[in-house]
Image (cartoon, rainbow, N blue to C red):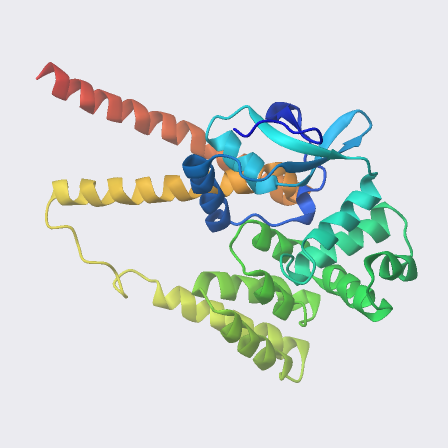
Length: 301
């Protein structure tokens, strides 16, 4: 841990708020890289915080905070900027100007300034040093994109650029298109092609039918007997394969949940995730008990 300087101080991670977290994405790969850097080199750059009604809020450094929490750290070095919430949002944009923010993150930030803080579009354009048409395009992007599709992006299921492509579709077709992209694992280029094909249909019924056929084809492709993995040669082989799968899925789920706390999702998506996690928890406890019993049998032997 670097020593505090005249303009920095150590802060307790448990006290930090994440009011601006919904404006940012934090994918699992980036979080893993930050966590590895902290383990290898320690903290190299101070967090940037600001005060809001007696609460220290994170302005820059969300990945560092989450990675540090995952490592069990309780303190990090931080600089406190004397700004309000509006200025903090503008600084997020300035810190990542033309390099760090995706179009969707820019859109979330602009919408927050417009909806939450009551700034007009010309004022947002002036303060962000952007043209008024840029502000309007970002607002149109986020206002025209179904919340369920935005939730897919926050969950790491859909690439931000793919979501931008899907935003070109009528809202009634966006969720189905996102399902096709996610379940088929389409690239951004393939997503663009799918969107263009849907837009070329001459009626809403034709668009719905096209997307339904894409989903139906996927269901047929994934039926038992089609492209199934090699069967295990023995029961021991099957258990070993399942152990490997559970280990990989558990690690991936841990990283995603650290990168995207439930508070960063829309209320509907967060509630669905809480229900799913509530159903998963007893399953994991039961599995842990079975594993403990198996290991206990070995020790007894």
